[in-house]
Amino acid sequence: SDAVHRYGFLHRLDLPSSGLLLVAKSYEAYYDLQVQLSSGELRRDYIILCHGWMSSNRDTVSAHVYWRGDTQWNGETQTVAGGRGKPSRTRFEVKEYVLHETVALSLLAVSIETGRQHQIRSHFSHVGHPVVCDSLYASSAVFQADLAICARNCLHRYRLSFQDAACKNYIEVAKIPGDLNGALQRLESKRNSSHAMFLRSSQLSTMSLFWC
Image 1 (cartoon, one colour):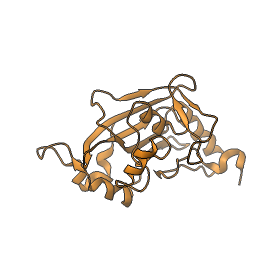
Image 2: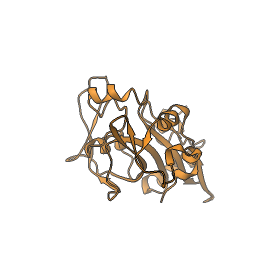
Image 3: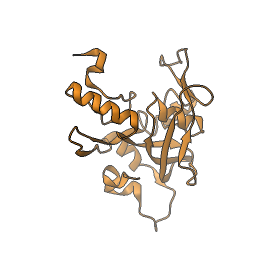
């Protein structure tokens, strides 16, 4: 019940994203995990679906992130990537190129080296590949069209890795929830049948998303 320590929560998830949250049960654990979070030892991995076919030769977005002071059309406050603000770095790997009718999309595994609010959404919008069904970082027309793909933004934190006070390593995994998995299964893979059909595989929800 300590609001100063955020009730034990080490980080947050943007609504309506899904995935894992880490909550400390003691002050000792809270401060220890905060050190891991600040030093980059606490790892947060995501799967996202974004617009366009992201170049497979690219694996990093580095851009400062800052808050806009105004309120956007849907009542939320937006961050802006590029220029001033706090340095931010997002790593990613292209997992699959897909189509929804004639709309090109990329399925990415993402890891953040910094933890700015809305970092993933802001960064991928900044490089011209907004997350699918993102009401804040895509245009209104794109967002409305995206509702035919999925009812909420396609961003899921599927893995957390950290250490406890005894230096024991933990890796926690959350499968892709049913709404996102169903949306992904309905997409058409750009790759030919000689490739492992990543989107059609039951491994989509599990360990095949891991990357280093």
